Image 1: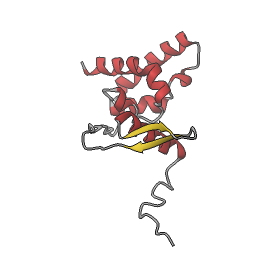
Image 2: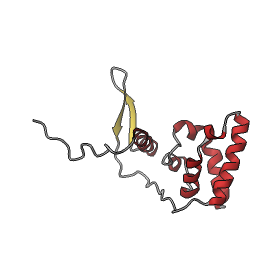
Image 3: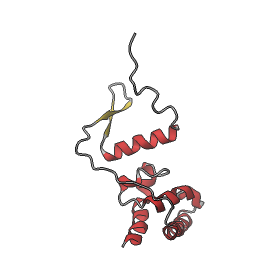
Image 4: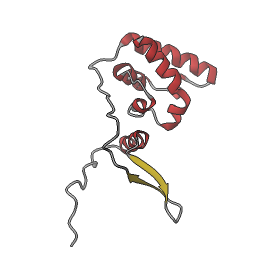
Length: 136
């Protein structure tokens, strides 16, 4: 019989949402490339990783409370202009992670829980500007 990979089941304890987020991060970073199979299915293939930039995301022990409050203020303003509840823009947990991690690029944002491709398209420039204003 065929032998199982030693990596079989390595992600068994991970949530489906986490695995999806990791795959999105690998796509954004250029480690995976999407393509369509002959019968129309979306597939992914691994690309050489030697030249990929390292994604330097290391959350501090606690979020920067000042930055968290500035992100909350931005979210409230954005929610009002979009006429949606604030949690639809970004959850508090996402804002706390942003205030801890302080991502500097869209690639970094892809590693933040709650920041998928749609939210990156919609909010990345604003969020990075709030975080950048904090750094500058």
